Image (cartoon, rainbow, N blue to C red; front, side, top):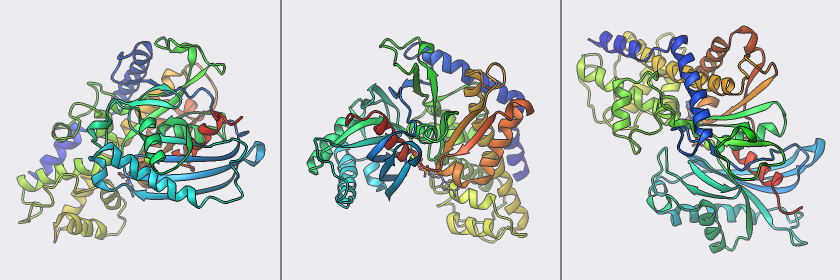
Length: 456
Ligand code: ADP
Ligand code: MG
């Protein structure tokens, strides 16, 4: 019985190369459709209005904010210009109190502004903002936003664990600005971006061959550099640079080729956003642990695998988290001691046999591999759209990736990398470099604030 559950899961979650090629080709098609017209695809392909990526020549002191899904960061960077690049950086990170994720927008933005105020207060006195120059800030807000300019955008919807009704459809920068004023902070928000755009900008600052920034953290998203004249839906004036960064919002990608299991269907149905963000629900940190929990629950209810246990924890949604499954997946002790510990600590499943622990690892492996392979197919889709999959452009392409899951989940990361090579083939994969973003998206926001600064 237990074996059957695992066998069915393996079959349902299989991702042979042929399927991944279909996923990649459809990703490229959806990208074209989303660029063609507003609402042309579930992949929204939003204009970021970032048309000047940082070059390394920017100078001055800039602030960044990063509101993702789990943590909140404030930071400041001192840019030396030319070869000096970043001469100083300071940052502070705080966990977002859970109650603020579903309260009111005044509370959330009030919290952000007060953290910022504390941080600004200990600024080095040597940094003078005299001669009429204002402090400038780049705001990384990692939820789908419809941009109207580089520093004006309205929230399309919440994703991940956020759900603050009164903010939907509202101008996010306006909310931040109001909250900052209440704190007595006089700071100009020079850019509103998301983590994918920030990651792209942060890496591009050092390397001109960077073409895309991708996130695998609590959620997933991608941003890339598009030729402005390849965006039919754009009605405005074309930028001087000829380029425009597109915020794909690829977490909402869907294709009938996606290997969706009964567990994914149930998770989606009971989620905050049913029917949406299906690709995200298969590939990102918020969900992988939860999918595994659902499989383990079924296993426990339908077989004697875990013996007589109290199901309270195993039945609690999101109780098993991706860092837990990652720790179990990387367990190299001969008797899978870490797996035993985690099962007991988090799910109150005690006294497991080695065979049972192996089965748990097998389940985790199926879910994490599927995630990593679908992630690689997404990247292959972007390369395909740009003709950088070896089909047209024969030049170096760098994709920079950030997010807690990519950073810490080694098996996910390795599998993503090998799968991308598999999909591109030996020759083409030599031209594609996957790089972990060292700086984080907040720095990217500060850099975009610099490249779009008004103080010059
Ligand atoms: P955010 O996406 O909220 O901005 P991060 O990029 O830091 O934040 O990603 C946090 C997510 O990364 C967590 O929700 C978790 O799913 C995942 N994560 C963090 N640590 C690990 C780990 N050790 N192994 C696997 N996943 C992890
Ligand atoms: Mg983040």
